[in-house]
Amino acid sequence: RSEILVTNDSGPAHFASMTPIRVVTLFGPETPALFAARSPNATALWAGIACSPCVNAYNNRQSVCRNNLCMQAITVDDVFEKVTRIYDSLRKRTPGN
Image 1 (tube, helix red, strand yellow):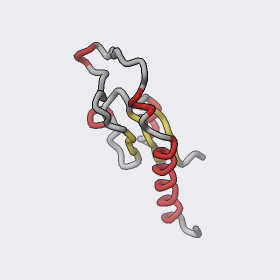
Image 2 (cartoon, helix red, strand yellow):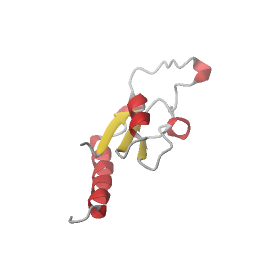
Image 3 (cartoon, one colour):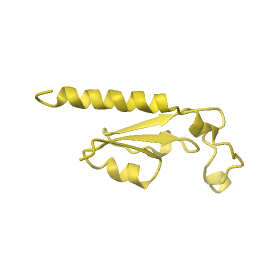
Image 4 (cartoon, helix red, strand yellow):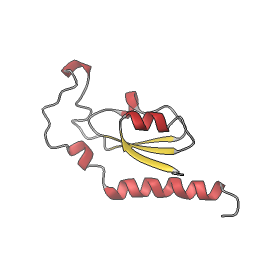
């Protein structure tokens, strides 16, 4: 059974947040302030660069950005660090570990 799901801001992030699985959701062109799952099992990763969020109701969810800088700003190391912290906290709460 999976203990941690890493995904972009999408349906699977919201569905998984309603289960015991811990969820790390990557946000780029959207803001976690409005769209992050409201669950103690959910963690949002967002770089918060100046042009993000760029997708919203006012621009019909369209963006002129073609570089995806907001997603590139979230590094593999950032994600690994977050997942490692969550995994370590799960191990500490599991009897026998």
